[in-house]
Image (cartoon, rainbow, N blue to C red; front, side):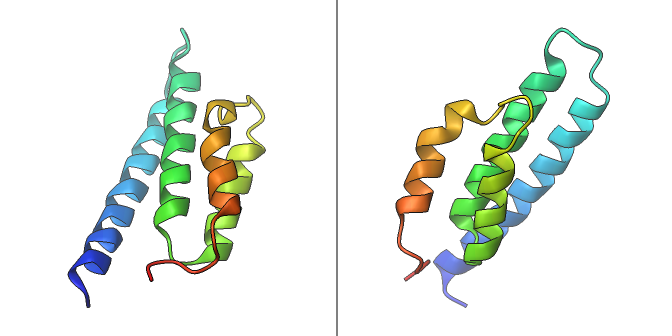
Length: 93
């Protein structure tokens, strides 16, 4: 396995773990915007994961989740979503 690909896989795993922790933080937030801040971090990590994953459909599903966020947490991430949607289907190569 090429070193850069192995590094991307490791980064994906870390990103997924961080996303899970942010969901947990948001679940137990007590107010004062903690939950919204946590959701923004979740959406940011989902955008990063979409860029890293070699599976275009998984990436599309992640970007859709960010776009459809009921609290509009992903609004600030719109330029990244648009750039991903405009990118070629070929990944890592």
